[in-house]
Structures are given as structure tokens and as C-alpha cells.
Amino acid sequence: MNVIARAASFATPEIPRLGSPEFRTLLQEIAAGASERDAKRILPFEQVELLRRARIGALRLRKEDGGAGVGLRELFATVVALGEADPNVAQILRNHFGFSERFCQPAPNDAHRPWARLISGGEIVGLAMTELNDRNVGGTGFDTKLSPKGDGYVLNGVKYFSTGSLFADYVMVRAQDLADRFVTVVVPAKRAGVTLIDDWDGFGQRLTGTGTTRFEDAPVRGDEVVFDDDTKGQGYDRPYHGSFQQLFLTAIVTGIIRSAATDAAALVKRRARSFSFAPAEKPADDPILQQAVGEISSAAFAAEAAVLAAADALERAVESRMDGSPDLDAAHEGALAAAKAKVVVDELAIRSGSKIFDVGGATSTKASANLDRHWRNARTLATHNPASYKARGVGQHLVTGERAPLTGFF
Image 1: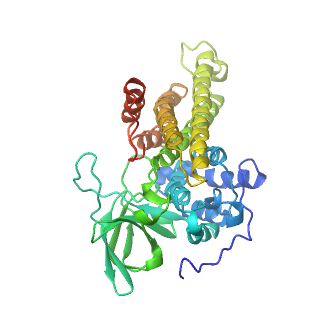
Image 2: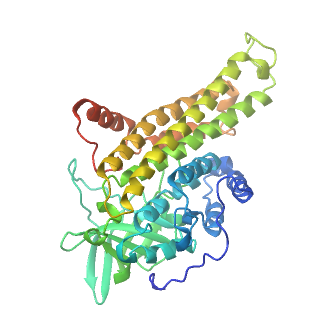
Image 3: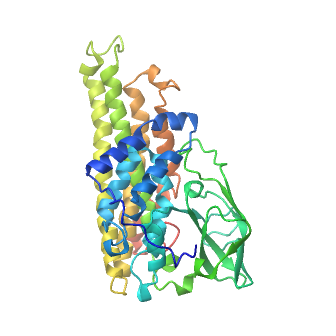
């Protein structure tokens, strides 16, 4: 069906909001079996379907467009909660919300409405952008090509790390046309010529569908194409557009710390024996173990505070765009806030994922316990744009006044 002609189906149901009984039930259903899915590599199709039916992907859309109209603070708090329930499921939605943030917010001439109708109906969008080419540092470009054919186009290329696309209804593809113009293409995931391959073999975030996507003469209609120079403030020509995506990952990592804190407390409560030299007979009364649990819980508290503060900074940048004159200073401050949050939260998560074993002893390292998933998942997410580069960018700005990079998920 033509994207522009799609009928919004947002009359039912009402989108569950953070703190509502419906959202708490949704979280419980997603959290159920999350450790087993991680251990046995059971892809969370059922859990993503729950989110699709609940239309969680329309949280950021304005109410008049069929969404919930939530601000960035509530959105990222929601991501933290989803990350606590299952960080794989949370990451599956990352590129969807990135698409919603770029293309579904109000734009001149109502350019956002076709995409808003798509999202308001519950559809989920994945991403196919990354290529394993040998571009020079700072270079941009895609080997994936959009070529004219008849009344439309065809798409050819191979993408890697296509997170979420395996579970998505649509795939957002970054490419170039034969004149080397940058373009975004949005096509159904099941269209002929589109092949999604579940070949992600990372040690963490195993269930995100972060695999290979192949496009082999995949047909593309004209209304499924948006050239960067035609986006009017949407799309990939927006300054610091990657800050949102970066903070999304940091929010998931925060959820992982919260989950680790819960598991650490439960582990101490159920321990029947401790070390022969422990200061208390019962592990639950051991002040050293209590301290370790408290440190993980405190890390979760600090991480969430950092994420929400950065969300507030990004919100100010978003508000500055609504009048058609985006404030570059506000966008830069949002980027710096997202970077600072990542630097701090990544370290807290990796430390917390290791500390959980201090409260459980050697038995907690059993594969059946799967407690290593917290460290594995946090470590994997932290590799997305290493914190060292973020810290350097923040420090460079403070020392020399040079702004952080405009692009590259900074």
C-alpha cells in the first residue's frame, strides 16, 4: 500500500504511558524469560509484537498525529524501563525512534504526515545504514545505490549492523543515487529484493537482529524516497542529529544497571552460605555484601539522573526547531550533555556488571545463572562510539572552544 495513502489506525488502543498499570503489565511481560532468551538465543518476536500492538513506537508523535505526544524526558525514562526489562528489546526500538524523531516531527508543508501515519498505526522501522567499506577518517559515502528504473527506482547494496530490521515492518536505508546525492529510502521489510540475515554473533545484545541486509534490485517507489536536500530540517542534514541516538543507548545501559541491582539484591537474599571469614553468619546480614548491592543501586540512580538531565538538554534543542530556526548552540549543548552522560554511565555499568559477582561468589559464575549478561550487554552497547572519543570532545571544547563534531552520533 502507498505510504502516503496509509490509513492511521490509532483509534485503538491508547498508548501505555510510563507509570500506568498498562505499561507496568507490558514491562512484566517483556521481562518474563528475558534471561532465558539471552542464554538460549531465543529471538524476542513475541515481545516486539506486544510493543507493536501497544503502539509504543508512537510515543513521540503529537496527539493530533495519533501519538502520545510525550517529551524527551519521559521517552528516555521509558527507554530506561525497557532496558531494565530486556535491553535487547529496547535496542530493537532504537532506530525506530530515531526515524520517528527525524521524519515524524512537524515540518514545513506537512512533510512529516505520511511518516507519522505509518508510525501511528503501530508499524516499526528498522535501519540499514552501516557498510564495511574503507572510507577515510571523516569521510562519508555509501556503496549502496539508488538507481532510476521506470516510474521509480531500484536499490542495490549490502548493509551491516542492521539493528531492529529483523523485527521491523519497514527498513530505513541510507544510500546515494547515481549523482552521489545522499538519500533515505523507506521500504517494507518483506519486499522482494530485500533479504534480512540473522548473522550477528556478538557476545552481548545477542537478540537485536543486528545482522546483514541485502538489497538486490529491490523496487522503490517515488514516495518512499527522501533526498537529504529536500528534508527541510528533517533527516540527516540536521546538526547533531546523532545525539538522540547516542543517548538512547545510554538509557538502555542505565536500565541494565537497574536490572543488575535487582539481581544483586535477590542473590544476597537467597544465599544460604557465605565465606568462612565473613563478618556475619547470614549473607543477608553481611555489611560487605550489603555495601556492594548499595553501590550498584547507587550507580543506577546516578546513571538515570545523568540520562534525564541530558534528555532535558536535548529537549531544549528540539523546542528551538519548532519555529523553523534551529538553535545551533542549544543543539551543541544537547550533544555535550549526551556525551557526558555516556562517559559516566558506561563506566558505572561495566563496573556494576562486574561487581555483581562480588555478592555471589564463585557459584554466581555458573552459566545457568547467566548473570554475566549484564556485563556482556553493557560492554557491547558501550562499544558504540567509545566513551574515550566523547570525553576527548567534551574536554577539547572546554580547553580550546572547538565544538563537538556535527555528525557521527556525537
